Length: 521
Image (cartoon, rainbow, N blue to C red):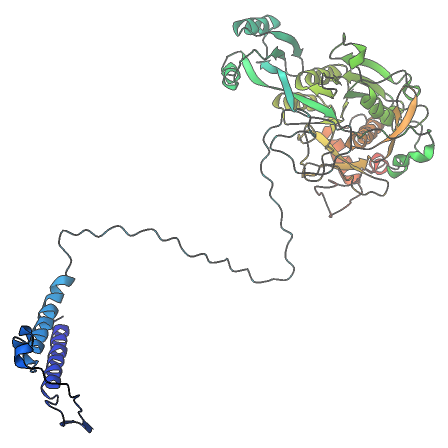
């Protein structure tokens, strides 16, 4: 610092000397020379001394030495004070440095190692969806909302909810529970598969979600949940067709064109849990051996059996068209009905009752041609059915490739089925996902329709019926096969389509019923 100050003083002194020298060496009068130039002083008329301004009497002489020295001293004084000014005040506190956002630097791409792998898109986790539906019309593929819903149909009831009591409690306890909470009991049922009483209760006016949540803390309650809605998985029927055998390409595709007469599903009980079956249709005469309705006193105006009749005809039709397993014993469990909005719909409460009844009647196969949201009560019922040796087959859904596998098809104990056409191409509106197990014909399928006619229908409901019928043939031929054996047999016999191995579009592949029936053990 001293060395720097000395250098500044030297500079100031040199400026001072230069200033003094420049002032004292200037020419004093006209005619003198400065360097090589002659100074010319302009001549002005002389003014008498008496007329001159008084201030000129005090004007300093032309010698500028004094001001120059003063300027130099001032410069030196300022330079001498500068080091002191540069010292920080001892009371000064350094402020905290402001956060500086690091500059954006794009990630460097990894070095290429040949063909890039296909990027797997991760889907956000789906929030449990209380409603399940079967679309009556073909829909374009689109992204699913956070709650699983089909089209614009509601996903759960706005007038009722479900409470499941803990195992072993009696019906009298259920009545006491409803009375304690001042709830209107619409209906209750004892689900034998779970040994639990299930209550359908009306939403009281002004009830909040936290009020229902408080019910789950009651020592008598196993769970309280929305009363989820479910809808059939089939497209609208096309114009009625004459029952020509050439319209049933599915039988040839599955390898069921010619079978021994002994392999026909005889002795096997298969429950169609749907909208009911129109037993008076010529194709289904004598097929239904037992039936159950969740609402026996329902008015005829709300009874719409079209979807259940179509599904049943694919499985067991005996006239006008050929069913996959013509001698199977069909159990009709009606859970669907027409609601006030004109939708054919079922709810969690009624579906659980139908499944429970079907297993109690000895059904070894459950055909579930509907789709919806995850439902803990329904999942528990289906798991209990599987433990008793009953296998469930369900439709993956008709909401398009952007939609995941719907429930109940997505449950581990259930076979999830997608649909293909005559050329083994994937059905355009089929849901896709890791839960898909099998594909089966489901596009332009001949079905029983109306009072005594036939039509072509498409959807994963139709594909599900083909798989259910094929399982009935397997159980007819090998009665001792359990749920795991059947799933393994069908997977190993399937015709691999799409990507090699199991994939989200076709699962293990398209069902090959003939190969599954005659596979070597």
